Length: 266
Image 1 (tube, rainbow, N blue to C red):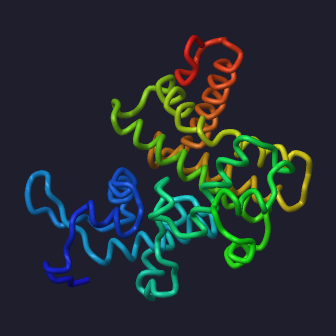
Image 2: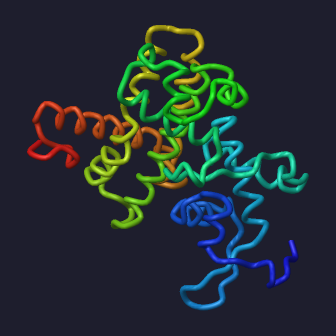
């Protein structure tokens, strides 16, 4: 795509337009999901509309279809060749409700609510009160509490992956498995109650959640494996072991057995 230099903009503007963190953008560039930016100096790169379009499609495939990055990499060129106009605009991932859409604000409230209470203890009225909206507004964005819960779990997975990726990028490559487990524990800890609630409902064989849980956890394992060992056929098995070690660290911290830096004195 030939884009004039005047259409170029900084990483700060790209993240502002899309809500995608800089660390995630860098990862997508390394994976080949985004075209290389225009380099104007040793530490200064410029991006363009093609990056925004690609991020829009990636966001849609991640959130709506919950596809792992490896599958998205296969699909993306053909989708972009046909045009990305049919895909929703990206929305911020940040915690500031003032910069989020109403749907994103509801999801942030849902993550907090489902992280503190069981599914049955949270009502649509609670979510509306937390997001400061009327029920009519809620139902313009979501069909039910169950749909919000599933979308909130998806968002937790994406947030956890972003935290894990950022933590590992600051350390040696390839990462040490023990250090990866500690980084994974820190990445999962904020949203782990939501993921455990989803797992519980799936294990109770509730039909609406079995497939949803399977898709969410498969995406977590597939993408975490790709972060740990890109292109390695055994990376999912490694990711599974790291996730199990991370969850064990969190629970050891809860009972004072050590292992989770999030719990003082553990």
